[in-house]
Length: 459
Image 1 (cartoon, one colour):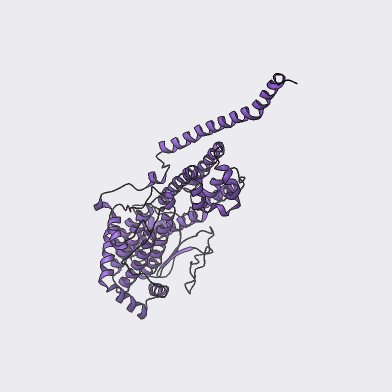
Image 2 (cartoon, rainbow, N blue to C red):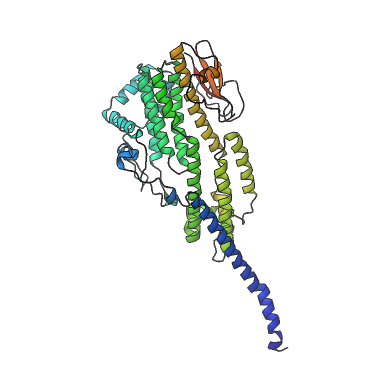
């Protein structure tokens, strides 16, 4: 058979085996690319950041920037991650001594704290932080434009400051200066609000940790103290400005932007991406990623990119819901994500965070803030009328603001008047009313999620 007799047959074979699949492949690449462009354009049109640099806090004047003053005390280096903080850093033994004093003042704890706070440098540092907390913004020089290596050394210093301040507040309360003690707790909450402004998912966690430190001291302080309505109103106004739900949603938008940066890095420099993420140690990325990041893998990349936008978008939406609704939806989303084949969306599987417990932690922080606001209103009620109200309905009649609801139940907090005081509680993350069972037992041991979030006032 001569060549001219088979050339058309070969041409048809090549067309169907090579040219047609290649054309379809590149057409698929084109259409997915257009979809991706449209998705990113829609995010931008909605004012959402598509890179961590876009999510970064905007510069503010120095005289409005709390970070300028924080840095005088924290002295953190955002290049190396180091710090030369001027605040005392408690050893584990000293930390235990402080918490024992917060829970039940002792001569040993008092001696330690008086020595600690007689130090001039510590006094000056605390006053600088107090002034800084009153500024409207806090913008640190973190390298938001380098999302893969962005460091947050200041977060540890914020937690350190909260521990020192709760000790300072406990000593003031021990000396009978309740207003000064409340003033230091306000500093803790204002500083936590500054942390929560940052678009990193770790930011609300740090803020929640700071608030948890303050809450433990506040419970003890408010349990026995008589506080005049002016002081309670000032503290309630401070708490009202701490919006952890907004902070969580803001952080989730920042997390999405960081994930998009990782996708871009995987496209530009797959070798560095694999080293940075440690993905070479995983079966998924040892076998799937080399194919995915190859020069002809355009449709695979774009499909993965679109899957990421879909799943993280759904997670951002769910993050705005209360725990009771959010957690089941997050668990369902997690199961759906895990069902994806390893080659379908390898980066999406790695980069989409699943933080049902973080949603619960956020609601726990919200519950404590709203419980504290309600306790302050109850204290003001008793100060003016001589006794606590018979019900929260009676309290509500005296307020110019709506009593908050329990973020876990969606109902009013449980209020139980007692002979000289009351118990107020949220049903907590287990969504079960445990009858006002405190998170800590009589020995101070944490019970975990099998308890309620309890605020008790004995007088």
